[in-house]
Image (cartoon, rainbow over all chains, first blue to last red; front, side, top):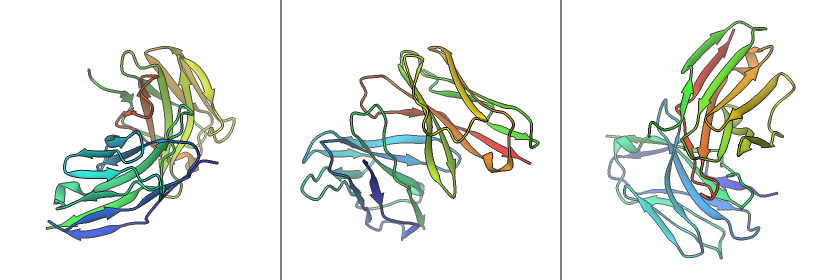
Length: 111
Length: 114
């Protein structure tokens, strides 16, 4: 079945460091791809999305590019802040009325 | 819009008691989802509705769990009887039917069964 794989956390970085969180998905059809973020004590929030190959989603300094050839949607940010500390979820949508969420990657940013 | 509203925010109950979690989706959203989040299993989809009709309840762990959506603005998730292993954060999310993955989540209900 359809699935998604994220890198395990926690990812621990110093403020202003470069961030990459890897995500790969099952290459069944052409899913839309999403990143959601969960801050402590809150529900998930949509961070960014891309709906077709080579599209780049971006928001709040975060970016991710839909790479069909490698079935990947890696999340990047050039300079992280302490306020970016959260859990990040990669989620493909395969036109089945529901998202498939990854296991989540916890990011901890220290000053 | 106030977003997806869940109640209560926290619930502590004794094993064997009935627990009812409530969700008010965003007005106009046709799809509603119930998720459970634990450290061990991560985020699990329990059930989802389209236009108030249950579409997929394969994630409901067992018969002790039931969910209803009597109208477009209200849904409940009931656990009867509750057990300690049901302790988790339960999230409700809603989406317009044509949104293709863009969900809005509520703040969750943290359930503790002692």
